[in-house]
Length: 256
Image 1 (spheres, one colour):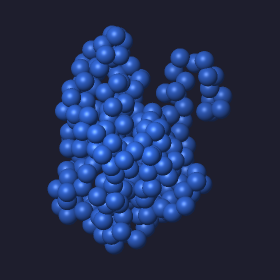
Image 2 (cartoon, helix red, strand yellow):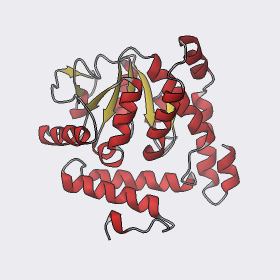
Image 3 (cartoon, rainbow, N blue to C red):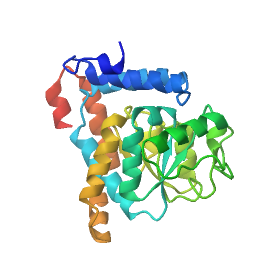
Image 4 (spheres, rainbow, N blue to C red):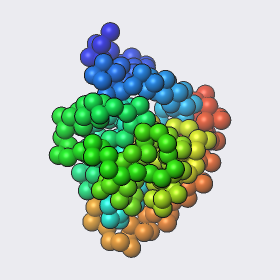
């Protein structure tokens, strides 16, 4: 069964569609096979969240939008799963907040970077960084430590969806403001982030974009107010509470 053959009234429609997107990403050479495992792990957490955006995650998305709009040099990091799951949505977010897109991979090859960059351009991106590889994130010995000097290395705010915990910590050590999208509130990445969004990428990215459009004409003071209203620790606690209650208690998830 292909993505187009999945009936929209299927109770697992959204989940099956995302699985097919990851499979297609592997076939296209933009997603690594390890990305299949990562997708399954995230899907398990999403099921326990009730496969919905919690109010705490929505507040985080608004804080993320305010952070990006107030940034001087925002960059959105893109790996193979992000490119497969939400390419057009990621490009749309970059346009909404005037951010650069940069491909950054753990299982790095120049060919994969080119394919992901081309894939993003097919979905509307004008320019994609990641091939210059003339900068670095200190303290990382693997390929994700290699970045563009005028991209992630120079950024003040970095969106790091589906992130490796060690790179999140290394970016934090560089003084970067980090926005992390991760379905596991207990992992290092969201616990390191200034703005952790515990939500499914396919919901979180469009949600941040919607908030960015709502805040597009906000003054610096109003952006600061939106950010100050957000409590990262509270967001993580709410997400953990929702996961511990499980998808079997929808009322608890709605209250988080």
